[in-house]
Amino acid sequence: MRFLITAGGTREYIDPVRFISNASSGKMGYALARAVLRAGHEVTLVTAPTALRPPKGADVVRIESAAQMFAAVKERFSGCGCLIMAAAVADYTPARTSKTKIKKDGRASPTLQLKPTADILKWAGRHKAAGQIVVGFALEDRNLRANAERKMTDKHLDMIVANGPAAIDAERSDAQIKTIDGDWLTLHGKSKTVTARRIVRLAEGL
Image 1 (spheres, helix red, strand yellow):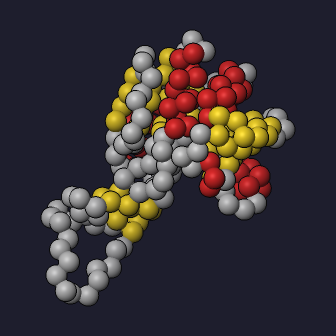
Image 2 (spheres, one colour):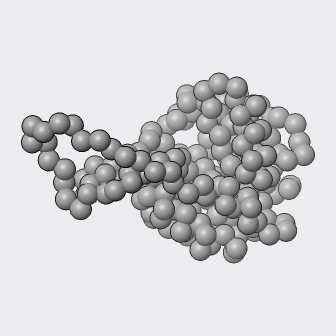
Image 3 (cartoon, one colour):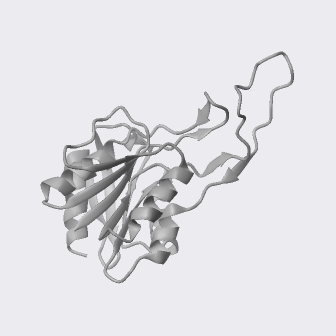
């Protein structure tokens, strides 16, 4: 099977040197890519900027913005058996990007207007073919299972992986996983390598 995996936090540029982003390290997405290769599958890794080295054997596509990630996923989606959206895609992007660096020159502080980014995961859930698998992640700071199940239904997912803010950039974290017809599975304090292997095994069984 060919897996399509997204990783890292997108960058939404305000001007040529400043951007909005998030604290995602990309570790989960990269661990998933390694787990896929270890299981004998093929993987395309669509990655936002990170300090990580991609696993040998992965087809790597480097992007920066949410729009670029959406374009990369749309181009490759029909050729994959399973999409795992582990990336932290920005929900908003600047409505306008300055072509030159915005100067701090004593004037009143500028107002930053934002617009929503495309919902890549929802698009994939709606456009998947028979037999295609779409897996999403939900980072929640309250009502974790309820919010994750709502996301799973709304975006037509086959599996959801839910965790809290403590998972960001952590080597070990808690994770809760649900497949479309299964019960919740809780992993306590597992490394991202172990969690990734479990996610890949579950995807193989869908």
